Structure formats: C-alpha cells, structure tokens
Image (cartoon, rainbow, N blue to C red; front, side, top):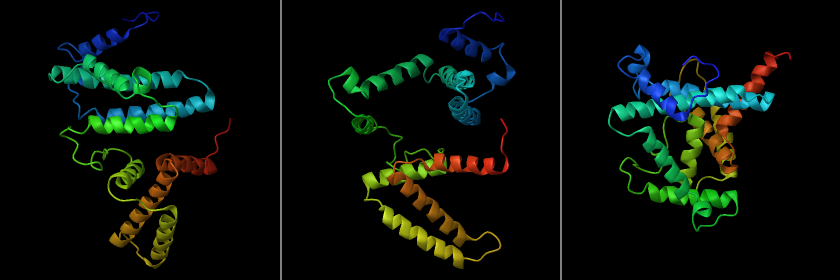
Length: 240
C-alpha cells in the first residue's frame, strides 16, 4: 500500500473506502453518516472551485487533480454508506448517471437533433421535466430548487422558474425602478440596531439585483465573489 510507484485503480479506491468503513477500519470513517459528511462535501466542492481558479492563474493543474480526488472521495463515501444501508451501490450511481447522460443527449446517442448549445439546453430541460414528472419528492417547481444553494444562486434560479411556470417576470426597467425606490427607502430608514424594515428593504434589493443578473444570464454569486476579490486586492496586494 505504501509503494509510491503504484497506480491505484477506481476499483481499488472502492475497496479502500470499504476497508476504512469496515470492522477493523478507521474510527473516524466508520462513524460517518450522510448527514455528518454534508460539511465535508461543501468544503471539498469549494476547494475544487478554488483549484480551477488557481489553474486559470498559474496553468498548474496539480491542485485541481487533488481536489477532484477529494470530491470523488466524498461521492464514494456516500455510496459506501448507502450500500451498507441497503439503499444502493456505487455501481448503481455510475449506471444511473450514465443512463441520464445518454437519455438527455438524444442528439448524440439517439435520433434527436441539436445544433447549438441553446438547443441542447432547451432539450435538456424538457427531458429533465419529463423525468421528474412522477417523482414524489418534487413538491413544486420552486421548492425543488435546493435551499442548500448559496442564496444569490438560489434567488436567480427561483426567479427564472417563477417566470417560466407562473407569471412573466419583471423587466430590466422595472427592476431598476424598484431598486431606485429601495434606495430612497434606505435614506429614510434610520436605525441604530437591527430593524425588520431595513432587513426587508435589503432583501428586496438583493432579489432585484439577482433578477437583473438572471435577465442577462449572469451569475450574481460569481459577480459578488469577484468583487470581494477586487476589494481584498485593494488593501492586500500580493507581491509576485
């Protein structure tokens, strides 16, 4: 196991995780559950995103390779726990996602057609909608959007689906006008401490900003992330 020249396989990774979870395995790994691993998955996903940024900046893919492995580790851990619980196996996970990719790409694996990325996304959404039609855990189009998503990302997705399933969303002009009124309200909302009125005004502003981003197919989460980085660099310039 300590041979540094050895190249481990996917199948060996599954066995390693099974061993860690086994009777004589690791005390930490053995007690993990789907719930206890949720923070780990969130952290590893964030670190993978950071590794992509590092790759873009440096051209060095070593960190990205490592972080992809950490995300894969989380997937395998959840699958192993599910297998122990008699729910499903890693083979079921692989089979399920493979079938989904084939099913949602009829223009590649079937008789469908899609000549542009936009047509691919339209077909994808229609196929996805048909797949989820009879799923008992799908309560409504808006409630199916995970609350675990970052709030700005979730807001844009909720607004997009509301526009599609319920009523036509606001226009850019309407959102900008509402933002102007919210700014005016901020000027008259004087408070030294927490105030419900102030919270509601800021909440409305964030929703309007998310809607503007949605209209222009922008990611409000990524925009804010970039602006935070700009702010940090303003005060903490990293010398090369």
